[in-house]
Length: 337
Image: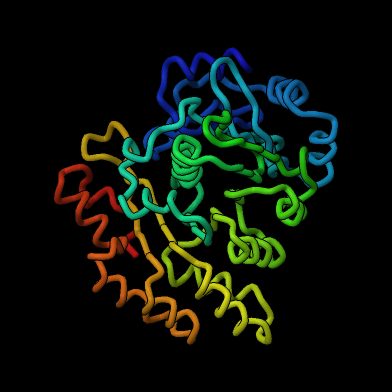
């Protein structure tokens, strides 16, 4: 199995590889699924691969919970792997993690996002669907901070994807399920570990969200991801997690601590040979902070449309710019919020 994956690595530029018992492997290339070979992956091959790859704890989780996440290395590449059971038996999806961390300029990250590395504290949310490039954007931002500031960067991930090495900063990377019990427990402990910057791989539950907001309020620069689309949806998602009696307080906290909400999606390039990111950016100016505090989240979109001079960009406008520059075609745009 490892030899098959290594061969596909050499022959194809794919983002994901899908493996199923008694089925041929499928690759996701530029967003499309293809079958490069009709060679069948046998049940014994896939189960042997899982046995070689998973720790004893991970094997136990797979059998009890029926799925498990981890990061693995095959040859010169790292993958974020998920083994899971379906009605057809064992399956696995491996997402390739590039070993080189791209720069923010290489990713065409908007300048207002690049300026966030200078912030001493606050909350920055990177949102979008699975596979939209959130982890890559965050890795580029963390690497820029590592290049330019002197401090302690703490990441909490499930699993660790990009490997960071200390440059000007000291970097500590913790993996949920291996180095920490949960996002919440690691985030709670982080406040005693003298971090300047905290990256939270995903805001999964009320406790993690509350701890992230508290960390941002108490002098830390906090980056986190959510599987949401658009700033209003993201803010509503955070507030709605809390009981009604606490939502007024959470709105007040967010209005003070939130710096920016970025939503991104990857769109196939005009030549069909790659994908490019479209970024929606909401910057918390005075008007937006008031709307959050007053619970008028539905008005945020209007403010974003009239505040382009402050670096705000709606997704529609970001996509229009990519079409106008010839980087993408309208027919390749699946969703326009």
